Structures are given as structure tokens and as C-alpha cells.
Image 1 (cartoon, rainbow, N blue to C red):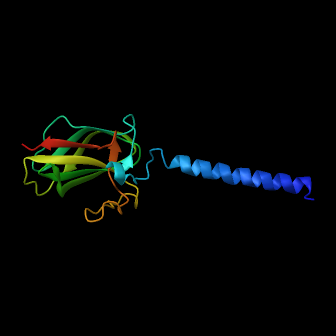
Image 2: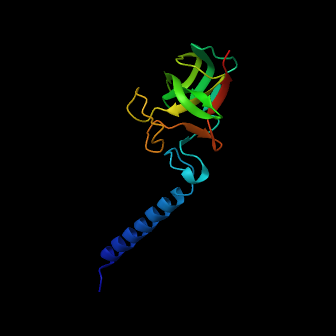
Length: 160
């Protein structure tokens, strides 16, 4: 016969394992900020619209772009690309911003050769203060873009 205290410990252990398994499985169906949602087109970090925003009202020059407002749930990067037929082309500007709201952020630009630019907000999740993103390996890069409502947090801006 098994002592009552041992039976109780075994039962509690089994319940704990079952509960942990249920929590792990439930986590597979919820949105997270781990950046691992390629099946639904989201290959960056999922953010809530109340926590991640990008506002640009003006146009860029060949030398500078001013971002009116960026709201980021963590330290982040403003990344400016040439518009390559609606997709991000060569990177022409990069500016670090801190968690929270940043206003009137100037981004220096180089080698602007298109009439439009694409500005995106990427998380700073790799080495702090170092832009760790490769177009050759976007899923393997820690500083992937934020996605809000299944769309990349990005804005197209005209160049004057």
C-alpha cells in the first residue's frame, strides 16, 4: 500500500505537469513579441496600436527626413529605405530612438536616388545601440520590424 503523503505528492506532480502542458499549448495560439509568425505574414515583433505608432507629415530631402512622432514599446530604430517598386530597397538612413514617445526626430540620409522612401520602426533587441538586421537573413536578425494589426509599422514618404 502507498502511503497517503506519497500518493498526494504524486497526484500534485501529475497535476503540475498537466497544468504546465496546458499553459504551453495555450501560448502557441496567442500573439507574442517573439517575432515568429511567418505563416500569417508577420515576421517581426507584434505590437499593439496603442504602443507602436509612426507619424510623418512632411516630405524628405536628399539629406534629411524628420519623423514627427514615433511611439515604440522598446528602444528601437527608425530605418529608411529607398522605395524599390513598393518594397524596401537599399537602406539610406538609420536613427536610434528610446522606448516611449520621441518627437521631431531628424534622420540623416545618404545616397537618396528615388522619389519615395519607406520608413519603418525596428526593435532594438540585439546588441543595444547596434543595428542588428540583415536583409539576407531577416528572420535570423534580432532587430526585426514591428507589426501592428498584421501590417509592418512603416510609412511611405515623398522626397522633394
